[in-house]
Image (cartoon, rainbow over all chains, first blue to last red; front, side, top):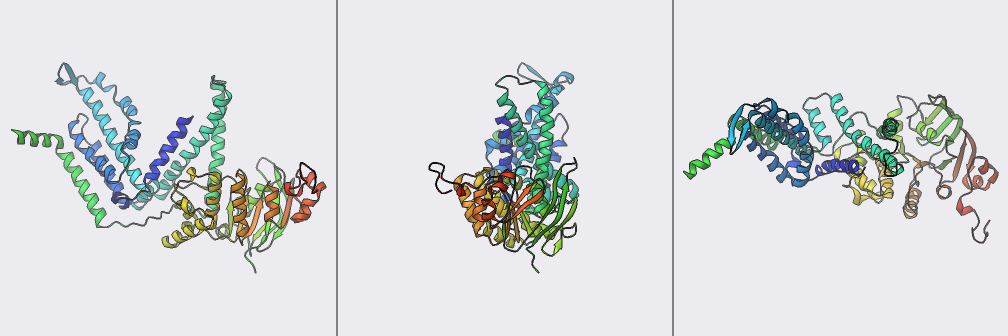
Length: 270
Length: 251
């Protein structure tokens, strides 16, 4: 069960990165949430055969991650975890969409392959942007920003609790599973039958623990609102940040940046 | 007129499944007293503690904290007055860093950010955990977690401290440190514990709970001297009051 424990610790590391101090960290959370939103909308609004125009968008995650001193390897590992899911979504496209696009040496590249690749690239971009948003802002501040941008409080508090209880559930799950593993002496234990009651127990234990945590929160005056020590306002810096990035995203959405750059380079060379 | 009195009158609690946890509990604790509530497993200690800051509602009876009866209306004030430290610090620490955790209560009290920061620094200093401020709680050792858990409660400036099994799971050194810390507090203190040697050091008064009623209430030394009473309540003398295990002297 080290894997579950490890995954949780890994997730907690994401929260810890948000306590860093850089020009990006210091920006108001709302600016970062808005910019990420514009970025995601720009990326997903391309038509399904778009491929090359997506690449210039990588500039955003790369620039933010390096300005905020995020560990590249860790962020890439986080993103790569979702690539298999994206591949499952797109893997049937090459079978159904056999319209020939172009030849790459001996290979005939069909529309299906292009759209499948496009799905994967988009997933990497959007998930990357979301992971980086949490890593430079912190989940708590992202929720607070959503609330200040007009999302109903009930929704943001639900989101926060969901996030908190992921840790509670996985920690309890890891413990229960470790106990089962140790007593099944390397064999299958009682097989599927034992999992039924294990999951039942897990639910009850998680529930009880969640109740104790809630009790501790109530004992310290929790009234449904999370506070943060970072007080920030939406100033000129934030405005420039949102406007600058959004302008770039819209420009890259309307013009194929890769083609433009390619044209420029070949123009210069010729 | 004192805000530090805890009065429990004819308290009864029956759980939804019919288990009678508390039958008829009566006691009054005065300002500045340090009191231990001891008893065997299942005697009703934890149930009793959960009543003291209004988490459980009495089936019958009344609780008064200071001048207020415990009701829904007085609950926020009572929760600030009564600081509760849970047995498992993992239940108590739920924010990403120690700072955020200690600041959680003061923020909920509506204090301004600078004041919160000052308070957090002060209480972490007081419990000897100032260097842990930016660490995530799950990276701390058991003793450190316990001290931070106490700091999360101290930061709300409670008048009464209630602690469930403060020394459980601590190594001898961490236990000794914690006892030293708790000795210095001026608050009204209520502990539950199976660590009877700690009780002997920290509490002048002891209340024994047995099957949901108060079986004895008096000076700690007197109660620990009564072997028949202790045996009846599934307890035994603290080790420091027993004779030397090798030569039998000191009995």
